[in-house]
Structures are given as structure tokens and as C-alpha cells.
Length: 124
Image (cartoon, rainbow, N blue to C red; front, side, top):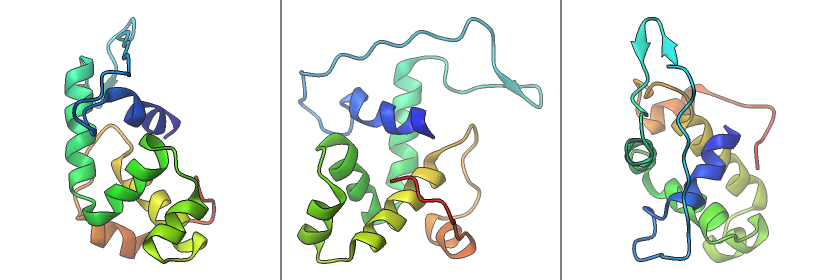
């Protein structure tokens, strides 16, 4: 999951027009497979597209990720801006990060995923 949070501010695809970001990607030395399937992420563009697609399924919560990891706002700043408690912001960011992480797309909607999962350890 740490890789996702590092990747989001690095791509520049989320905020068009940013030229201040350099992205360097070295593919793994061996092919990563899961149950005999090769990974979809063979280059930075496909990885960026996949992260962008997964974020698009997260509704308005995706903007919390952008505020936190692209714009660099603190949890407290985001909470004040959207008039929510810090704990709620942290839980929503946590849900988005867990939803967009992993080698495969989740087969359920983001709303169903949030409803069916409760995490003790928060990532933000």
C-alpha cells in the first residue's frame, strides 16, 4: 500500500499540467505472476491508468487522497476544509487506499467495499 501512496503524487496524471514532477520507473527484473496471470502493470503509463481508474470508482473520497498526497495537506487541514472530524477523514482515506491497492481490481463497488470492511489499523 505504501507504493500506491508514493505513486499517486509522482505521476502527475491526477493533476494535469504539472511539469514539476519527474517519474522514473524500473520494471521488475522478473515477471510477476499471480495464478499464472501476468501483471497488467508493464509500464508506468498502464500503472498510472489503473490507479486513475480505481480512484475514479471511489466517488468524492478520491479528492481526499489528492488533497492529502498530491497537495500535501494535513488531515486537520482537510477536515477543516470539508467540515468533518479528523477521524472520519482518516477512515475515508484509509478506505480509498485499501480499495485501490492490490494486483487485481475489486469486484465490488467502493460503497459495498466500505460497508463490508472495518479496519482496526488506519494508514493515515
